[in-house]
Image 1 (cartoon, protein in one colour):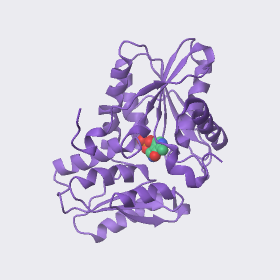
Image 2 (cartoon, rainbow, N blue to C red; image 1 turned 30 degrees about the horizontal axis):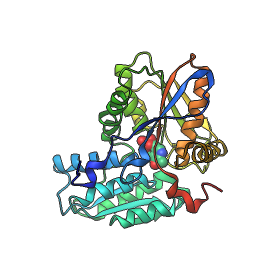
Image 3 (cartoon, protein in one colour; image 1 turned 90 degrees about the vertical axis):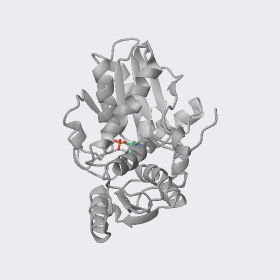
Image 4 (spheres, rainbow, N blue to C red; image 1 turned 180 degrees about the vertical axis):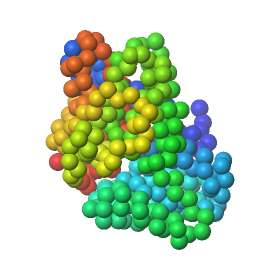
Length: 304
Ligand code: PMP
């Protein structure tokens, strides 16, 4: 089969059964989202945000400046989607996020504007809105509040998982939460078809979903400073809070034992899935998401 655009290569990632001992004879199936062309789950969102903006007239091809606050992967996804319409892109990224992700955004033609790490994603969002005020007709998709964020996953990732499973049973869905779009959108699709389904959101220590206090963490891409608005209408049975140490140790284990070169939010997803398997009935099937790859974190010593 011959493809005609990089955009056609987004999605339809493999669902891989991990070959490791899981408690209670259960199995963990991971959706390998790092195999998207921009290297992460957020390629799906970039496509939807840009295409929808064009459809509703908020984005004019060749003209509208796109401005977005991002930890990196959404920026890469948006920059990739914007290329086909020749749109200028400005991405506002807190300084702490990996140099590789910022280099990839620039490689795709985007301008990267750093905000202080201490100001968090809220600081980056404020800066993006401030910049947009100065550029006539600029468009800020704002993934943190845009309802298209969960919808992107509800319409792509969720149905793909159901199709991948075919007639196989599904017991639980486990996914990390940054904006919460991946978890909320995918869980909605799965919950509509699979009952009962046990749903678990994953956060690092330093995120507030389980009532903990906010503090810096090394696990990149997940963790929230405020409860995502997308969680208002989705059932969450449990939040698993995973330490950086456990997530990074799982990242090394996944490389050495499975040949999977994934980022720290994937490590956290694996640790959470193993914990969930301990309390689920025997022979359960757990589906989780591996959102991106480790190569964008080498400068941060992901394997050190
Ligand atoms: N893992 C990584 C590496 C990410 O970049 C993101 C997006 N911030 C997530 C997980 C979480 O995705 P979401 O924003 O949809 O909750």
